[in-house]
Length: 209
Image (cartoon, rainbow, N blue to C red; front, top):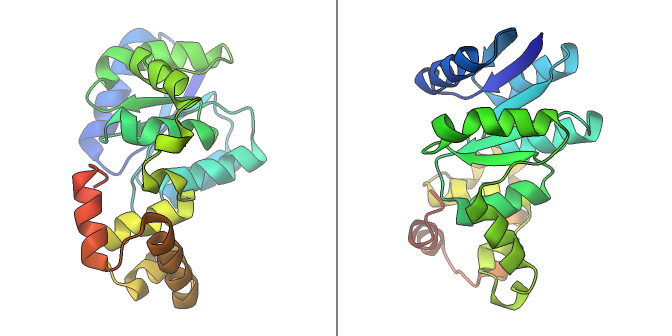
């Protein structure tokens, strides 16, 4: 029996993904969680064939959870879902060890194909992402500044851009205020931005929120 774990903080999304999978796979067991900590707990205590996770959830991000899962279960296929454009997230997700990336806009058409492919030990990316990856090989000099951020710096930047204070972010990510301030300084250095309002404007312009 195929065992799939779905992690997304939106009930409607989870139910929609569940129905798509049930309609296609005859013998399937699906469990749902709504945040990253529960996702990690389930992965640690139960055997799964595939994990499907949103990139943005309460508490830790999907990328943060992916990193921890990859460190312990390197062969477990993890598909990442996001509402964000593929051009902004797919390469980062691939580098983080995901087995595939799906935008939520296309998930209904591509989900079954993606699951079948990762079950074969392959990676799943859309034709657009494959083209982007090919172009990425020779594009380092033209990278946007946010692409130089680590995953943690990227998470902190998005939270700053959404209006969160350093102390709010520290609590949300279970980090010290000093550590978050250090990340903020690195973000400023790598992007050339000078204030939180600059970060917000930059994130909006690059469709990172």
